[in-house]
Length: 430
Image 1 (cartoon, rainbow, N blue to C red):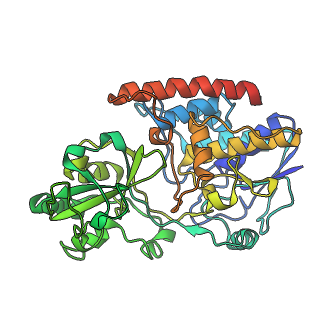
Image 2: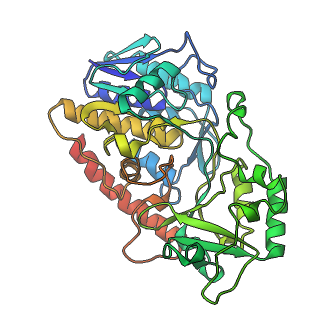
Image 3: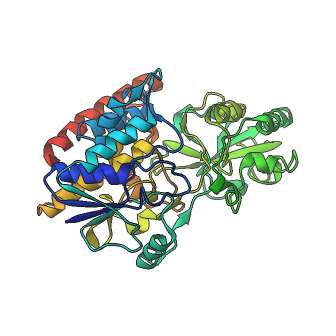
Protein backbone atom coordinates (compact mmCIF):
# COMPACT_ATOMS: atom_id res chain seq x y z
CA UNK A 1 0.00 0.00 0.00
CA UNK A 2 1.34 3.40 -1.02
CA UNK A 3 0.54 6.31 1.28
CA UNK A 4 0.07 9.74 -0.29
CA UNK A 5 -0.11 12.64 2.16
CA UNK A 6 -1.98 15.70 0.91
CA UNK A 7 -4.91 15.85 -1.51
CA UNK A 8 -3.97 18.99 -3.36
CA UNK A 9 -3.15 18.99 -7.06
CA UNK A 10 0.13 17.10 -6.62
CA UNK A 11 -1.19 14.49 -4.21
CA UNK A 12 -4.32 13.75 -6.25
CA UNK A 13 -2.29 13.55 -9.45
CA UNK A 14 0.14 11.06 -7.90
CA UNK A 15 -2.58 8.95 -6.28
CA UNK A 16 -4.66 8.78 -9.46
CA UNK A 17 -1.72 7.81 -11.68
CA UNK A 18 -0.67 5.03 -9.31
CA UNK A 19 -4.23 3.75 -9.02
CA UNK A 20 -4.60 3.74 -12.79
CA UNK A 21 -1.52 1.53 -12.89
CA UNK A 22 -3.28 -0.96 -10.61
CA UNK A 23 -1.51 -0.03 -7.35
CA UNK A 24 -3.33 0.36 -4.03
CA UNK A 25 -3.16 3.87 -2.58
CA UNK A 26 -4.18 5.47 0.71
CA UNK A 27 -4.70 9.20 0.25
CA UNK A 28 -4.59 11.16 3.52
CA UNK A 29 -5.84 14.70 3.96
CA UNK A 30 -7.27 16.64 6.90
CA UNK A 31 -10.14 17.88 4.73
CA UNK A 32 -13.02 18.27 5.26
CA UNK A 33 -12.64 18.15 9.08
CA UNK A 34 -9.90 20.79 9.12
CA UNK A 35 -8.92 23.48 6.63
CA UNK A 36 -5.68 25.41 6.25
CA UNK A 37 -5.80 29.25 6.41
CA UNK A 38 -5.86 29.39 2.59
CA UNK A 39 -8.63 26.87 1.93
CA UNK A 40 -12.39 27.38 1.93
CA UNK A 41 -13.78 24.14 0.48
CA UNK A 42 -13.84 20.56 1.65
CA UNK A 43 -13.08 19.29 -1.85
CA UNK A 44 -9.66 18.14 -2.97
CA UNK A 45 -7.37 19.99 -5.43
CA UNK A 46 -8.77 23.36 -4.43
CA UNK A 47 -7.60 26.32 -6.51
CA UNK A 48 -7.00 29.11 -4.00
CA UNK A 49 -5.44 32.12 -5.72
CA UNK A 50 -6.72 32.00 -9.30
CA UNK A 51 -8.86 30.02 -11.70
CA UNK A 52 -6.29 30.39 -14.47
CA UNK A 53 -3.95 27.57 -15.41
CA UNK A 54 -2.05 30.02 -17.65
CA UNK A 55 -1.50 29.85 -21.40
CA UNK A 56 -3.02 27.06 -23.46
CA UNK A 57 -0.89 27.14 -26.63
CA UNK A 58 2.11 24.80 -26.28
CA UNK A 59 3.96 26.55 -29.11
CA UNK A 60 3.96 30.03 -27.57
CA UNK A 61 3.67 29.43 -23.82
CA UNK A 62 5.87 27.19 -21.66
CA UNK A 63 3.05 26.36 -19.28
CA UNK A 64 0.93 25.43 -22.28
CA UNK A 65 3.73 23.11 -23.36
CA UNK A 66 3.90 21.59 -19.87
CA UNK A 67 0.15 20.94 -19.95
CA UNK A 68 0.47 19.14 -23.28
CA UNK A 69 3.31 17.00 -21.91
CA UNK A 70 1.10 16.11 -18.94
CA UNK A 71 -1.86 15.22 -21.17
CA UNK A 72 0.30 12.68 -22.95
CA UNK A 73 1.01 11.04 -19.59
CA UNK A 74 -2.70 10.80 -18.73
CA UNK A 75 -2.86 13.70 -16.25
CA UNK A 76 -5.94 13.92 -14.02
CA UNK A 77 -5.46 17.69 -13.71
CA UNK A 78 -5.73 18.09 -17.47
CA UNK A 79 -8.86 15.92 -17.62
CA UNK A 80 -10.46 18.01 -14.88
CA UNK A 81 -9.46 21.25 -16.59
CA UNK A 82 -11.00 20.20 -19.89
CA UNK A 83 -14.28 19.26 -18.17
CA UNK A 84 -14.49 22.54 -16.24
CA UNK A 85 -12.99 25.03 -18.73
CA UNK A 86 -14.44 28.52 -19.11
CA UNK A 87 -13.75 31.05 -21.91
CA UNK A 88 -10.48 32.89 -21.27
CA UNK A 89 -8.97 33.82 -24.64
CA UNK A 90 -5.57 32.17 -25.02
CA UNK A 91 -5.46 30.90 -21.44
CA UNK A 92 -6.86 27.75 -19.86
CA UNK A 93 -9.21 28.93 -17.11
CA UNK A 94 -11.60 26.73 -15.17
CA UNK A 95 -14.67 26.88 -12.98
CA UNK A 96 -12.97 26.34 -9.61
CA UNK A 97 -15.86 24.51 -8.00
CA UNK A 98 -16.39 22.16 -10.95
CA UNK A 99 -12.66 21.55 -11.27
CA UNK A 100 -12.21 20.51 -7.64
CA UNK A 101 -15.42 18.48 -7.69
CA UNK A 102 -14.23 16.53 -10.75
CA UNK A 103 -10.88 15.69 -9.14
CA UNK A 104 -12.50 14.81 -5.82
CA UNK A 105 -14.98 12.42 -7.43
CA UNK A 106 -12.30 10.81 -9.61
CA UNK A 107 -10.17 10.12 -6.56
CA UNK A 108 -12.86 9.19 -4.03
CA UNK A 109 -14.63 6.84 -6.42
CA UNK A 110 -11.52 5.06 -7.67
CA UNK A 111 -11.54 1.40 -6.49
CA UNK A 112 -7.80 1.46 -5.88
CA UNK A 113 -7.78 4.62 -3.73
CA UNK A 114 -8.77 4.72 -0.06
CA UNK A 115 -9.34 8.27 1.18
CA UNK A 116 -8.64 8.86 4.87
CA UNK A 117 -9.51 12.11 6.67
CA UNK A 118 -6.63 12.65 9.07
CA UNK A 119 -3.84 15.10 9.74
CA UNK A 120 -0.52 13.34 9.25
CA UNK A 121 2.09 14.60 11.71
CA UNK A 122 5.06 12.38 10.83
CA UNK A 123 6.69 11.00 7.70
CA UNK A 124 5.00 7.67 6.87
CA UNK A 125 6.88 4.47 6.24
CA UNK A 126 7.94 3.86 2.66
CA UNK A 127 6.54 3.74 0.06
CA UNK A 128 5.02 7.18 0.44
CA UNK A 129 4.61 10.55 -1.26
CA UNK A 130 4.43 13.74 0.80
CA UNK A 131 2.53 16.46 -1.05
CA UNK A 132 1.31 18.78 1.69
CA UNK A 133 2.02 22.03 -0.08
CA UNK A 134 3.37 25.41 1.01
CA UNK A 135 1.20 25.44 4.16
CA UNK A 136 2.42 22.15 5.60
CA UNK A 137 1.24 21.69 9.19
CA UNK A 138 3.65 22.60 11.98
CA UNK A 139 4.08 19.06 13.33
CA UNK A 140 4.73 17.48 9.95
CA UNK A 141 7.05 20.36 9.00
CA UNK A 142 8.98 19.77 12.21
CA UNK A 143 9.22 16.04 11.42
CA UNK A 144 10.52 16.83 7.92
CA UNK A 145 13.11 19.23 9.31
CA UNK A 146 14.24 16.60 11.82
CA UNK A 147 14.47 13.99 9.08
CA UNK A 148 16.49 16.26 6.80
CA UNK A 149 18.58 17.81 9.54
CA UNK A 150 17.91 21.25 8.10
CA UNK A 151 15.15 23.85 8.32
CA UNK A 152 12.57 24.34 5.59
CA UNK A 153 12.96 27.51 3.60
CA UNK A 154 10.47 30.31 4.11
CA UNK A 155 9.84 32.03 0.78
CA UNK A 156 8.59 35.58 1.15
CA UNK A 157 9.22 37.14 -2.23
CA UNK A 158 11.15 36.65 -5.43
CA UNK A 159 12.42 38.93 -8.16
CA UNK A 160 11.48 38.71 -11.84
CA UNK A 161 13.58 36.72 -14.30
CA UNK A 162 14.21 37.84 -17.89
CA UNK A 163 15.57 36.07 -20.96
CA UNK A 164 19.22 36.82 -21.71
CA UNK A 165 18.58 37.36 -25.42
CA UNK A 166 16.01 40.07 -24.68
CA UNK A 167 18.44 42.30 -22.74
CA UNK A 168 19.63 45.28 -24.78
CA UNK A 169 23.41 44.96 -24.42
CA UNK A 170 23.88 48.26 -26.24
CA UNK A 171 22.44 49.79 -23.06
CA UNK A 172 24.05 47.39 -20.60
CA UNK A 173 27.51 46.05 -19.81
CA UNK A 174 28.89 42.93 -18.17
CA UNK A 175 31.12 42.99 -15.10
CA UNK A 176 31.15 42.82 -11.33
CA UNK A 177 31.63 45.65 -8.85
CA UNK A 178 35.19 47.05 -8.79
CA UNK A 179 36.09 44.70 -11.63
CA UNK A 180 35.91 41.62 -9.44
CA UNK A 181 34.24 38.33 -10.38
CA UNK A 182 34.59 38.51 -14.15
CA UNK A 183 31.40 39.08 -16.13
CA UNK A 184 28.97 37.21 -13.87
CA UNK A 185 26.61 40.21 -13.74
CA UNK A 186 24.93 42.26 -16.44
CA UNK A 187 24.65 45.89 -15.39
CA UNK A 188 21.74 48.06 -16.51
CA UNK A 189 22.63 51.74 -15.99
CA UNK A 190 20.28 54.71 -15.65
CA UNK A 191 20.78 58.44 -15.67
CA UNK A 192 19.02 60.68 -13.16
CA UNK A 193 15.89 61.30 -15.27
CA UNK A 194 15.49 57.60 -16.07
CA UNK A 195 15.90 56.68 -12.42
CA UNK A 196 13.42 59.32 -11.22
CA UNK A 197 10.80 58.13 -13.73
CA UNK A 198 11.33 54.51 -12.67
CA UNK A 199 10.90 55.32 -8.96
CA UNK A 200 7.79 57.44 -9.60
CA UNK A 201 6.09 54.64 -11.53
CA UNK A 202 7.25 52.04 -9.02
CA UNK A 203 5.62 53.93 -6.16
CA UNK A 204 2.32 54.32 -8.01
CA UNK A 205 2.14 50.75 -9.37
CA UNK A 206 -0.78 48.52 -8.42
CA UNK A 207 0.07 45.72 -6.00
CA UNK A 208 -1.28 42.21 -5.61
CA UNK A 209 -3.55 41.46 -2.66
CA UNK A 210 -2.09 39.30 0.07
CA UNK A 211 -4.00 36.70 2.07
CA UNK A 212 -4.71 37.57 5.69
CA UNK A 213 -2.35 34.88 6.96
CA UNK A 214 0.53 36.34 4.94
CA UNK A 215 0.31 40.01 5.84
CA UNK A 216 1.90 39.80 9.26
CA UNK A 217 4.95 37.85 8.14
CA UNK A 218 5.71 38.84 4.58
CA UNK A 219 8.10 41.73 5.14
CA UNK A 220 10.45 39.94 7.52
CA UNK A 221 13.86 39.60 5.89
CA UNK A 222 12.70 40.10 2.29
CA UNK A 223 11.83 43.71 1.54
CA UNK A 224 9.78 44.36 -1.64
CA UNK A 225 11.43 46.94 -3.86
CA UNK A 226 8.36 49.19 -3.84
CA UNK A 227 8.35 49.27 -0.02
CA UNK A 228 12.06 50.05 -0.02
CA UNK A 229 11.55 52.90 -2.51
CA UNK A 230 8.79 54.40 -0.34
CA UNK A 231 11.37 55.10 2.36
CA UNK A 232 13.00 57.74 0.18
CA UNK A 233 13.64 58.39 -3.50
CA UNK A 234 17.36 57.64 -3.15
CA UNK A 235 16.93 54.50 -1.06
CA UNK A 236 17.39 52.21 -4.06
CA UNK A 237 20.55 54.06 -5.09
CA UNK A 238 22.09 53.12 -1.75
CA UNK A 239 20.71 49.58 -1.99
CA UNK A 240 20.09 47.25 -4.96
CA UNK A 241 20.60 50.04 -7.53
CA UNK A 242 23.90 51.23 -6.04
CA UNK A 243 26.23 52.45 -8.84
CA UNK A 244 29.41 52.52 -6.75
CA UNK A 245 32.23 50.49 -8.31
CA UNK A 246 30.36 49.83 -11.55
CA UNK A 247 31.82 51.34 -14.71
CA UNK A 248 31.48 50.31 -18.32
CA UNK A 249 34.36 49.60 -20.70
CA UNK A 250 34.95 53.31 -21.23
CA UNK A 251 35.11 54.05 -17.50
CA UNK A 252 31.80 55.94 -17.35
CA UNK A 253 29.98 56.35 -14.04
CA UNK A 254 26.19 56.19 -13.73
CA UNK A 255 23.50 57.63 -11.48
CA UNK A 256 21.96 54.21 -10.71
CA UNK A 257 22.61 50.64 -11.86
CA UNK A 258 20.43 47.54 -11.68
CA UNK A 259 22.42 44.31 -11.70
CA UNK A 260 21.21 41.10 -13.32
CA UNK A 261 22.54 37.75 -12.11
CA UNK A 262 22.55 34.40 -13.93
CA UNK A 263 19.60 32.26 -12.92
CA UNK A 264 20.90 29.07 -14.54
CA UNK A 265 24.26 27.64 -15.53
CA UNK A 266 23.57 28.13 -19.24
CA UNK A 267 23.09 31.87 -18.74
CA UNK A 268 19.81 31.87 -20.67
CA UNK A 269 17.93 33.56 -17.82
CA UNK A 270 18.85 36.45 -15.52
CA UNK A 271 17.43 37.50 -12.15
CA UNK A 272 16.80 41.18 -11.36
CA UNK A 273 18.95 41.42 -8.22
CA UNK A 274 17.16 42.93 -5.24
CA UNK A 275 13.90 43.43 -7.13
CA UNK A 276 11.60 41.16 -5.15
CA UNK A 277 8.15 42.66 -5.52
CA UNK A 278 4.44 42.46 -4.84
CA UNK A 279 3.41 44.42 -7.95
CA UNK A 280 0.79 42.83 -10.20
CA UNK A 281 2.29 41.07 -13.21
CA UNK A 282 1.32 43.65 -15.89
CA UNK A 283 2.70 46.38 -13.62
CA UNK A 284 6.00 44.55 -13.29
CA UNK A 285 6.39 44.45 -17.06
CA UNK A 286 5.46 48.12 -17.37
CA UNK A 287 7.68 49.42 -14.58
CA UNK A 288 10.82 47.33 -15.10
CA UNK A 289 10.67 48.00 -18.84
CA UNK A 290 11.38 51.64 -18.01
CA UNK A 291 14.97 50.59 -17.33
CA UNK A 292 16.60 51.24 -20.74
CA UNK A 293 18.36 47.87 -21.07
CA UNK A 294 15.08 46.10 -20.27
CA UNK A 295 12.83 48.08 -22.60
CA UNK A 296 12.12 44.97 -24.69
CA UNK A 297 12.70 42.43 -21.91
CA UNK A 298 11.07 39.03 -22.17
CA UNK A 299 9.87 38.06 -18.67
CA UNK A 300 10.33 34.35 -18.03
CA UNK A 301 8.97 34.64 -14.50
CA UNK A 302 7.39 37.53 -12.65
CA UNK A 303 8.18 38.33 -9.06
CA UNK A 304 5.82 36.83 -6.51
CA UNK A 305 5.19 37.30 -2.83
CA UNK A 306 3.44 34.84 -0.59
CA UNK A 307 4.00 32.42 2.19
CA UNK A 308 5.64 29.26 0.90
CA UNK A 309 7.67 26.78 2.92
CA UNK A 310 9.77 24.56 0.72
CA UNK A 311 12.72 22.17 0.80
CA UNK A 312 16.22 23.07 -0.21
CA UNK A 313 15.64 20.36 -2.80
CA UNK A 314 19.12 20.17 -4.39
CA UNK A 315 20.47 19.10 -1.00
CA UNK A 316 17.90 16.43 -0.24
CA UNK A 317 16.04 15.30 -3.39
CA UNK A 318 17.01 13.36 -6.48
CA UNK A 319 15.83 14.43 -9.92
CA UNK A 320 12.97 11.91 -9.64
CA UNK A 321 11.69 13.79 -6.54
CA UNK A 322 12.71 10.95 -4.20
CA UNK A 323 14.55 11.55 -0.94
CA UNK A 324 18.26 10.92 -1.24
CA UNK A 325 19.04 7.53 0.30
CA UNK A 326 15.36 6.52 0.41
CA UNK A 327 14.26 5.67 -3.14
CA UNK A 328 10.53 5.16 -2.37
CA UNK A 329 10.01 8.25 -0.20
CA UNK A 330 8.95 11.07 -2.50
CA UNK A 331 8.07 14.74 -2.10
CA UNK A 332 5.75 16.49 -4.54
CA UNK A 333 4.16 19.86 -5.14
CA UNK A 334 5.21 23.39 -4.31
CA UNK A 335 7.17 22.26 -1.27
CA UNK A 336 9.78 20.85 -3.69
CA UNK A 337 10.45 24.20 -5.34
CA UNK A 338 8.13 24.18 -8.33
CA UNK A 339 5.99 27.29 -8.59
CA UNK A 340 2.39 27.28 -9.79
CA UNK A 341 -0.69 25.06 -10.00
CA UNK A 342 0.26 23.21 -13.16
CA UNK A 343 3.88 22.79 -12.11
CA UNK A 344 2.75 21.41 -8.75
CA UNK A 345 0.46 18.89 -10.42
CA UNK A 346 3.26 17.96 -12.83
CA UNK A 347 5.57 17.08 -9.95
CA UNK A 348 2.90 14.82 -8.48
CA UNK A 349 2.43 13.13 -11.83
CA UNK A 350 6.18 12.50 -12.07
CA UNK A 351 6.24 11.08 -8.55
CA UNK A 352 3.52 8.66 -9.60
CA UNK A 353 5.44 7.65 -12.72
CA UNK A 354 8.69 7.10 -10.84
CA UNK A 355 7.07 5.32 -7.88
CA UNK A 356 5.26 2.89 -10.18
CA UNK A 357 8.48 2.01 -11.97
CA UNK A 358 10.43 1.49 -8.77
CA UNK A 359 7.78 -0.72 -7.20
CA UNK A 360 7.80 -2.88 -10.32
CA UNK A 361 11.55 -3.37 -10.01
CA UNK A 362 12.64 -0.80 -12.59
CA UNK A 363 14.78 2.30 -12.21
CA UNK A 364 13.31 5.76 -12.52
CA UNK A 365 13.78 7.42 -15.90
CA UNK A 366 14.00 11.22 -15.81
CA UNK A 367 12.24 13.03 -18.66
CA UNK A 368 14.63 14.57 -21.19
CA UNK A 369 15.97 17.99 -20.21
CA UNK A 370 14.52 19.31 -23.48
CA UNK A 371 11.01 18.90 -22.00
CA UNK A 372 9.48 21.15 -19.37
CA UNK A 373 8.92 18.11 -17.15
CA UNK A 374 12.60 17.26 -17.45
CA UNK A 375 13.75 20.85 -16.95
CA UNK A 376 11.74 21.19 -13.73
CA UNK A 377 13.20 17.87 -12.55
CA UNK A 378 16.68 19.20 -13.23
CA UNK A 379 15.89 22.41 -11.36
CA UNK A 380 14.91 20.71 -8.10
CA UNK A 381 18.04 18.55 -8.22
CA UNK A 382 20.39 21.28 -9.45
CA UNK A 383 23.28 22.85 -7.61
CA UNK A 384 22.35 26.48 -7.15
CA UNK A 385 23.76 28.61 -4.37
CA UNK A 386 20.42 30.30 -3.75
CA UNK A 387 17.71 27.77 -4.57
CA UNK A 388 14.36 29.42 -5.33
CA UNK A 389 11.04 28.04 -6.58
CA UNK A 390 10.70 27.98 -10.36
CA UNK A 391 7.77 27.92 -12.75
CA UNK A 392 7.52 26.67 -16.31
CA UNK A 393 9.29 28.99 -18.73
CA UNK A 394 11.21 28.56 -21.96
CA UNK A 395 14.35 29.89 -20.28
CA UNK A 396 14.87 26.65 -18.35
CA UNK A 397 15.04 24.59 -21.56
CA UNK A 398 18.34 24.07 -23.40
CA UNK A 399 18.73 26.69 -26.10
CA UNK A 400 18.60 25.71 -29.78
CA UNK A 401 21.97 24.79 -31.26
CA UNK A 402 21.59 27.72 -33.65
CA UNK A 403 20.67 31.08 -32.17
CA UNK A 404 17.16 32.28 -33.01
CA UNK A 405 16.45 35.95 -32.39
CA UNK A 406 12.77 35.71 -33.31
CA UNK A 407 10.95 34.72 -30.12
CA UNK A 408 8.02 33.02 -31.84
CA UNK A 409 10.33 30.95 -34.00
CA UNK A 410 12.44 29.98 -30.96
CA UNK A 411 9.45 29.02 -28.83
CA UNK A 412 7.94 26.97 -31.64
CA UNK A 413 11.20 25.09 -32.13
CA UNK A 414 11.56 24.38 -28.39
CA UNK A 415 7.97 23.13 -28.23
CA UNK A 416 8.30 20.83 -31.23
CA UNK A 417 11.51 19.38 -29.85
CA UNK A 418 9.95 18.90 -26.39
CA UNK A 419 6.87 17.12 -27.72
CA UNK A 420 8.97 14.79 -29.84
CA UNK A 421 11.06 13.91 -26.80
CA UNK A 422 8.12 13.55 -24.40
CA UNK A 423 6.49 11.07 -26.78
CA UNK A 424 9.63 8.92 -26.58
CA UNK A 425 9.58 9.21 -22.78
CA UNK A 426 5.91 8.25 -22.59
CA UNK A 427 6.50 5.21 -24.82
CA UNK A 428 9.25 4.09 -22.46
CA UNK A 429 7.56 4.56 -19.07
CA UNK A 430 3.92 3.64 -19.85
